[in-house]
Image (cartoon, rainbow, N blue to C red; front, top):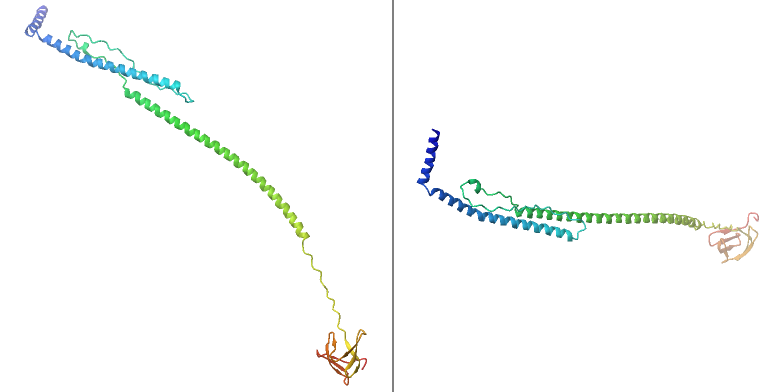
Length: 263
């Protein structure tokens, strides 16, 4: 029974081949045409991978040469670049059988050029930022050095000023002492009190009198002869000589008479 079934199946396949003998040939031609269309695409991808590998290699050489001939004092860290290995793509075999496994393309991971450019841009930005930070640090160090030198100068000036103030204070004290000594020496002495010796006015009395003339005697014993118009110190001018009444009238209103002893 099994043999009969197999024979029947083979007979049916044979019948299909007889019914449509050109069907398999059409399928083979379609698969060949599809393979021929995919072959140029694989060639283009291969060429693109080769170009990318050349660009990456040129960038690595440029970075290496730039690092060697750079004049920066600090060493430049080499830029890490992602290299994509070039994988040779095997030639597409001619499809002779309609097997789907022979038509699957080989997957290749190609590194896009934009990634390396972005990495280079970021590295360049980092280098510029580091240069800016270094310049700022250098500027701050210079400013700190300038400030320290200015502080030292100010300290020296303050010390010199304090010494000058001390010297000036000593000089002022010395001058104050000298001024005090000179003040004591030049102090005006009290003027000597002039005691004016007042001599008492002599008191005159009539010693003798005649019309027109009188003889006067003082208490100290001095004598004086006067007549009308004579001037007596302390009494004035003789105005009238009255012999009858025994008096001499002076211009000041004083009257000279005889002494009580004579009366």
